[in-house]
Length: 276
Image (spheres, rainbow, N blue to C red):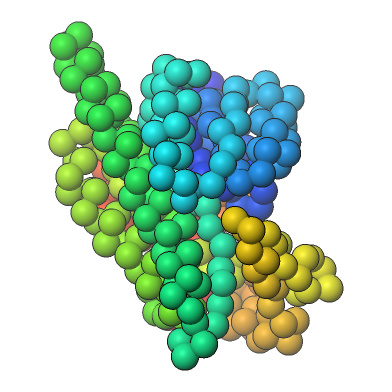
């Protein structure tokens, strides 16, 4: 028996990296998972990994910034698995520049993926969740505690040079989280944020260890961190290392378990002890 048996989860950006680990972790505890990625192949690979381990999953590919995506994503959970219990807004990337060189397109693109997309998904989920709560009440059944986990960053808590767009979007995620915690408490939904520190993914690896750019909506976005800077950053972490995607997934999972049913409107920093 898993702690999430019978639950239905949706996880954006779950074809690779942190998102894939989150999807796998939730599935390993019994949740049926709607997997999302911009690209079809990574999403299918995560679905296959879940199914090969005896879990249930389905892919819902596409960009979270597509205005029609949110409704399709939420409806996939309802149509395929009959409900919606856990929402993890994880999808995103960085596109860095100092403010005097940052274009409007650069700023808008990052705000769209990190803040507007979660807003749209939560907006689309509200009628579904409200309907499920009313259905339970009509049947005299207990209303289960549902979970929203929005992903933020320590950049959203303390800022980060070269990331005015990303830090602003992630700070906005905190405000969105606290507001939804107040609005959705009546539905027995907890809404929390996990703010990641340095987590090793394809976006943070030194260029020699990973890609030097990724393609997003037709744009080539430079990724990777200078190895000397990575080493300096790791030295500032009390645990002495960058986090792994599994570490990050573990923090999200904590806020999806029954043990966190009375924790809401909080930001959990997953950063190895690093503080702003």
